[in-house]
Image (cartoon, rainbow, N blue to C red; front, side):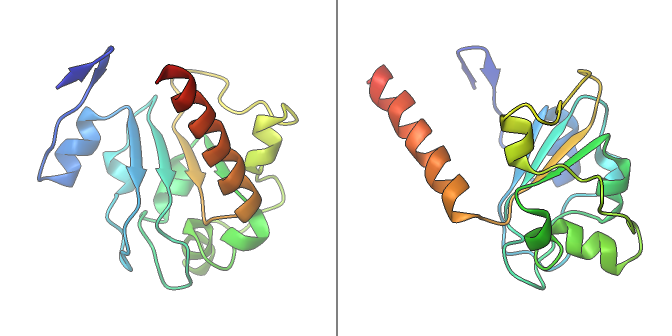
Length: 146
């Protein structure tokens, strides 16, 4: 399917789906990784939304190590529930001092992606104010088009 320049395909094999995708969104109740680090290729972006409770884990912790840019919605929260939690528990990551938060990217305090070849990951565990702002923006954009 193609819609306004966006190509979409449904695939049963997650590795094949990741190979096809430029943008990957995970939003599952998984407690074991469903996205493997060696599947990622330059230029891809991953938004992980399913690890919103302790014990949930969608990304192989090595995905965070492989990423050129990892962004948390809230670092203190992703340390407790989120993909960062799993990466810290397994020892894949040990330093969280330089992790930018989504708000820093949005306001320009952190540059975000600096090259189209970078692998980027956004770890979204759910923060009420950000979720409300995103929903408000999406509703306004949708309302303007319809």
